[in-house]
Image (tube, rainbow, N blue to C red):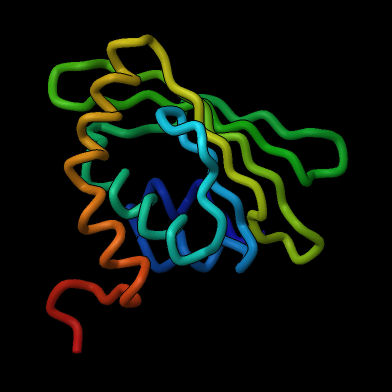
Length: 137
């Protein structure tokens, strides 16, 4: 398995994307409809890196067999404290094929929804055009 937690903690968008299976499905805490595919999931995760401040994982749980993981996190969006959990399922290759995020309290979910809505035009552009690090050629 590519170390997703290490990629997040390093704020490394390329390593984040490398941890995703092509057929990954992302389930947002603020949208009912899942987002299928690596391009949109990677773009959403880059958006999350831009909106979360002081992000840190505080606990990690693993299921029997090592294919299911829960990563409990804390962060801020402005002055709103966020608590949440990333639920990950790994495919046979050790890549994430199912990614569900939950957050609490309601004020955090509302702040996340607003912050990500402000990012969504850029997220859609990145997902459809292929992402490059700003300044890369």
